[in-house]
Image (tube, rainbow, N blue to C red; front, side, top):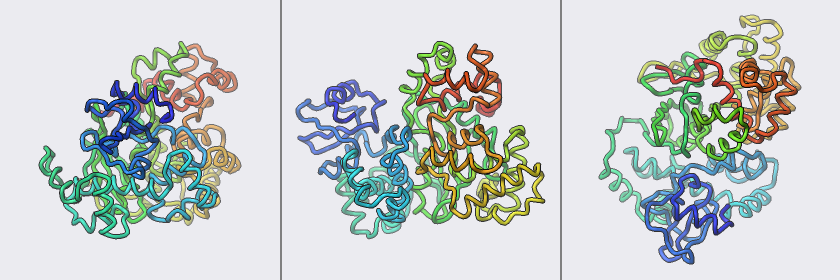
Length: 490
């Protein structure tokens, strides 16, 4: 979009927050870059230039605006709607892969050479993987500086910098303030008292956001010991590269309040990325709803409660296991089966608030389980053990960087995997916005009530007009049933 100057200028002049994250405005006279919704008086058109990423702005010598803080804008929705190499690379960079494994590690995950990845990212984003990772490190450093009392040296290494000197130079270059000045400015602002060890931050999103199906679904399907709904917040444990964490997510009218307790602050980038992915916060709900509203049968559902997101997962392997446990049983039964696995094979954790007890077991931990101990039909035991074995030995990978169609083909080849299981994993674990569940009982009931075709083949043909947002159409169709997943817990 950043190449369409006229459209970008209109977005800047109208201060349209929907375009935050789509592009960034750099001002040639002040050498500052802003988000489109920056509240200051827009500069003259001849003084504006546009970039597709904050990293490209920084690489061109611009610094972040202190007023609108463009580094905190929602991510581009493009990366969640695509499965090409650039989109997969952006999701991996967001998860901190470059910081942990370098550009060669990023390229290896994508199956390309480092040179090819560099060229593709430069062509589309105006910055290579190192520059994109550097911009993310700067944002992580700012969060740690402003929300914790960690010494600056600890902040530097936790944010992914290789040295304190590089950390200081980057922060000064990007924010035009020294790290100490950033902390002083944050201390002067009105903030709630900090809890020792807890990192509190706000997760932005594009309005509207309907929390009912999002948090209602997560709470209704929560696995005891791993997840809970407590005092208006969804809480869960997280397995992270350097340790583990506990997160509490609370919906607010203009943001999601996030409270993180981490055993190692180096996991902050990954934890934030996982939380944003879980809640689908980088979606563009206006674009989605506008297309779905064109169907007169869906329009009343959208007008009643717009802005529904797809509730995802923090770990693809975990969700795949839970999807198998939930085959042809009630939500309550699926939670019971999962809780037994957690108690037997999960790693215990300490929760200061007392409600969470374990991490969800990894595929490696589940690979040694005795199928005879599972209270499941024999065929489903085979399905579960085969899945766990494939995940544990690496022959099946379910991550944000997965190729959607390749993952579908690998899943359908496993015993006991039918279209419903494959598509629900594609929707919630892989993040495919076009995943569709025509055989789901709730979808078929909704179709019958709304006057849509109720047979899977006919419904799939009818849903072609909803592409590429059929996963969001599923969220609206599920609201026809009065099910707990559609309501925030009281």
